[in-house]
Every structure is written in structure tokens, then in C-alpha cells.
Length: 340
Ligand SMILES: NC(=O)c1ccc[n+]([C@@H]2O[C@H](COP(=O)([O-])OP(=O)(O)OC[C@H]3O[C@@H](n4cnc5c(N)ncnc54)[C@H](O)[C@@H]3O)[C@@H](O)[C@H]2O)c1
Image 1 (tube, rainbow, N blue to C red):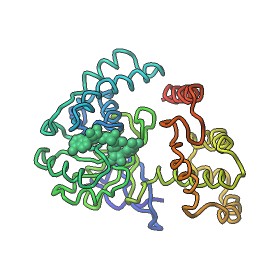
Image 2 (cartoon, protein in one colour):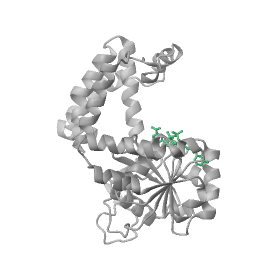
Image 3 (cartoon, helix red, strand yellow):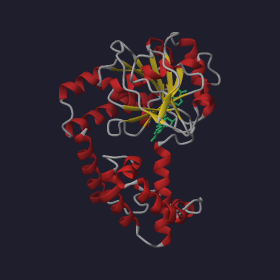
Image 4 (cartoon, rainbow, N blue to C red):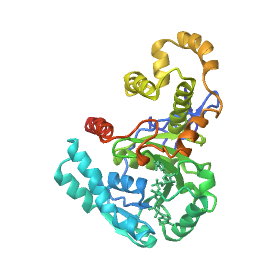
């Protein structure tokens, strides 16, 4: 149960920002509101792995999208990379060639940050280095219109850490996209202490307008929600492999044939409700003490990394990555994208 604590438009039933009665972190889903988002210009600063994906998603949904990077090569690679994303969507039957052409026409690359002055919504996607991000914010503060919203795609910094040098803290928040945005719709929206509720609402509305599924956290915690869950599962997967109870292949098959399917329909807490909380309590009482709780499991990862087996990039990790295996993954990815 989430208790609304404040709403800028109190009549709007979708306004559900609040906190749980037990004070624990809550994900609150805000429905997108009616908004005049039609003429919004989206800015993306940093055109690496995430920036290109975010910009493509924005352009695909009809937004003029201006992008900037300090690295000329990275900037030059934006259009071919955006094209590759759009081709993957065509291949999966999600868009046609006209949509691709229109999307590409909505992306503008610029070598200077000053161009961001034209944007009402700027997403920063530069490396995870606090000083670097603060430097860009200081420059953006001189450029952006008073009503512009600035967000960060940070993986780990809190909104208050990031907003520290900003005067307009009320117009800053986190939008944490997942990679790649055209396949994984989640955006974790994390407002800071000073973020205006209306800014959070506008951000959620824009994320929805560019085809993303935005959820709002009521408190910033390391890893937000998605990565905490991902790494909790990874820790136990490593623990199982290390114990010798199952091979990496078996662990992955178990997940794909059970949890992977179920979690596409119901989340872990819905699943517990469906299974019966009394039953889940009984199982948890004897099973949870058995699960890994420390970082000892990291030794398994360290051994692989020290041996140069870093995964697909080196050709091997837990698996030897030959073409056949990669093709299987690509086919699975195509199926997922085609489902939308
Ligand atoms: N890689 C992921 O899977 C992932 C997922 C979610 C969030 N993130 C977060 O997104 C952000 C970007 O990550 P990434 O993986 O795209 O990084 P990346 O290294 O691929 O790209 C960063 C880009 O920023 C550019 N850049 C550096 N300084 C700049 C400046 N001052 N002005 C303009 N551009 C500048 C670089 O030239 C580079 O092209 C990070 O905060 C990261 O933690 C990454």
C-alpha cells in the first residue's frame, strides 16, 4: 500500500507518489498524464553505448533529438549505430523503412554543447565519473532554459550527489535506462530530495511518449531496483556453480525454463501472492538461511577474469562463445524484440 503524500494536481488519480506505511522503498508507477509534449526537443549528452540507444528511441517516437559528444569519432558513429538499431527493429517486424528514415531525420549530431540550449529535456549519458558529470552540469546550467529538465542515466550515483553543484535542483532527476532501450523498456526514474513533483510527472510522461516503461522510486538506493535484483540472482547463481550442485549451463537453463518465463508475466511478489504467502513463508524460513549472503562468491568471477576469460569479448567466460552460440542468442533477442 502506497500512501500519496503530495500531488501537484490532486484530482489526478494516477498521481501516486508516496511512501509505504513500513517506510520501505517503494516503486510507484505513475501513469503518463495528458501533457503538451509534442514540441519537446530532447537533448542527449554523451553518445556512447547508452546515449545512442536513448537518442534513437526518442527520435523513433517523433522527437527532434539533438545529441552531443566531445569525441568526434563517437559523434560520427551515432547515425550508423542508430541505423543498426532501427534495422534490428525492421528485421523483427516492429517498424518499416519509412519509420526508419523518419527516425534518422529526427537525430541531429552536434560537436558543441551549446546546442543543448534548444532542448527542453536533456539526458546526460557520459561516463560514470562524478567530476565529469558535475563539469557538464555546470556548463549546461549556463545554457538551459529555466523550464528545461536535466536527467542523468547514471548507474550508481544518487540524484542528490549529482545535483550538488546545480542551482535548479528541482529540475534534476535520474532516468536510468537499460541496455538496449529498444529491447528493454524499463526506465527507473529517481527524483532527488529537491526534485519538483511536476518535473517527475513530466519525465514519466516523456518516457512513456518515447515508448519506455517508467517506474518511480521514492528513495534512491544503490543499484536502484533492477540491478539489485539482477545481482542478487547472480550471487546465488555463482554460489550454486561454486558448490558444484549444477553447471553454468544447468543454472541458465533452469532460469530460462522457469523464472525467465514467469517473470515476464508476474513479478516475484505477485508470484508469491499467487503461490500463497504462507507457503512462501514456510519455504523461505528453511531456504533463505542456505542462500549466499557474502561476497565470497566473487572469487569465482575473479578467477575467470584473472584467466582472461571475460566473456563474449574474449571469446570465453563461463562458456566458450562460438558463432553457433552467439547466433542462438541473437535469434532469441530477435524474438523478444518482435514481441514488443
Ligand atoms: N553501459 C550500460 O549498460 C549502462 C546501463 C545503464 C546506465 N549506464 C550509465 O550510462 C552512462 C553512460 O554509459 P555508457 O555505457 O553509454 O558509456 P560510454 O563510455 O559508452 O559513453 C560515454 C560517452 O560520453 C562521452 N563523453 C565523455 N565526456 C563527455 C563530455 N564532457 N561531454 C560530452 N560527452 C562526453 C564519451 O566520449 C562517450 O562517447 C554512465 O553513467 C553509465 O553508468 C550504462
